[in-house]
Length: 241
Image (cartoon, rainbow, N blue to C red; front, side, top):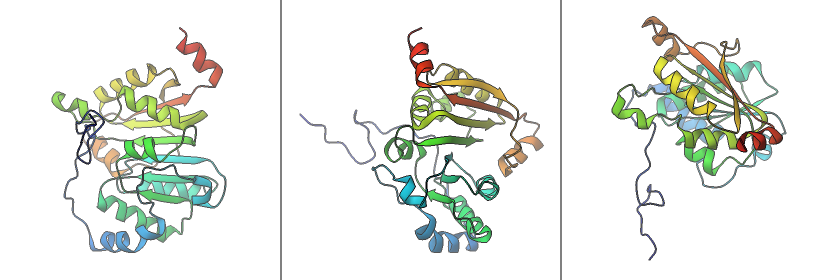
């Protein structure tokens, strides 16, 4: 008998564990105006169908997806100094989406698009395999309480999904100011056969975000990780070990 499941439930009839909680953050008037006026211009509505990124940006270029861009300061700054690359930012919180849209307009950026939706569903349903040159995940929610660790985004299933969306040689860049989460990230990603990498110096191209600044003020050490999608022959050799 077919399972009659409610919207938002997975194939087993359970609601998936989310790595975020939609909080009612303060939405400024400027963010609200930008969200209303600019999301129809630079936003991509979520739909469970593959995006044609060449058609979306009107060109063929390296493509980077950023997960959880916060208030968008890093996204806009990186896109502004890399006009030869295209960026898709994914965020669930309306104030952050409004803030990034405002930055896009102020800087006159044409190489950024925004999706306001769950990043896992975007990766799984909207991004094709080997479609991306890079994925950025800077300062995701560390969910510090042990009972909440299951909500952390970087888990084996996510590692496999993210790796599958990268081209051979594509990079997954991560940063966190939570040491225990950094160790979990390192262990999970090192165990993924499609990826190779580890600790890396903070790239000069990554500007300091408000989340990073807050962590540094609290004395949290910031740790950067970089993993690269293996070439096909290396993937096969690793999976055979």
